[in-house]
Length: 282
Figure 1 (tube, rainbow, N blue to C red):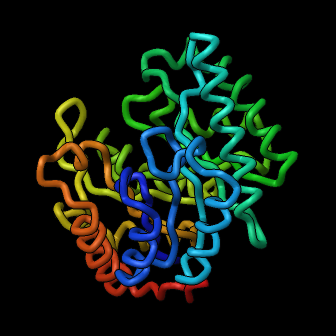
Figure 2 (cartoon, helix red, strand yellow; figure 1 turned 60 degrees about the vertical axis):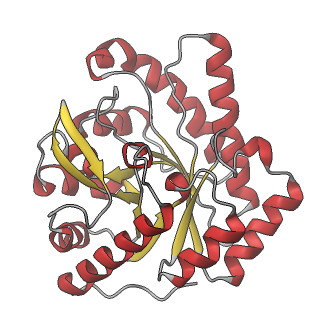
């Protein structure tokens, strides 16, 4: 396994600043977020900037396991749906541009609400299937993230979608915190999804829905070493990527690099306690 950091927690930090500082903290990979509010939004990166960022990652020996392009797949407004699919397809094309041997996966959630699952599941199969077909033609994997409060919030819903679409280019971006916030243990939720998992997010949680909040790893008492052992024993050996929630970012005293440093120290200790050697960086 290796340790990564998602720029989800750094919307306005220039890559020239983020990349060297994250590498210096010991992170071995980075997930780049390409949504509109970010400095790395698809619309803001021309060909030269995309090439410059990829070269920067190579110079600092940071792998690029994933691109975060989270966009609803169930928008009812036709114009909004077109915009969402344009972004997701654009992220797929970007993954091809940024590929070395294998392109980074493209992460997305589904949108919707848990109570809308029965109403939306047919539409999800249709639209997610179209996106996966587009990505597959370009050799890119779509990584679907189950999300607390979303239409796809439970392992059995994910597994159902996997069975319906049945493509090797549809996998899971596993963020256990979304199950933890619903009261699921690591053992109850993680092992059944690991066979489909190509990337992860790691963050802390306090409380259970509806009264819960996401935290930076290290602000909580969660046993990250146990989590790492469970994922390893279930067969996962990819990136464990820290994600800082918007809940944390809304704090008036939020400082992105302090959060990244705390998470790096916390996960480094967890790797050591779990007896898991981190893979050599690129």
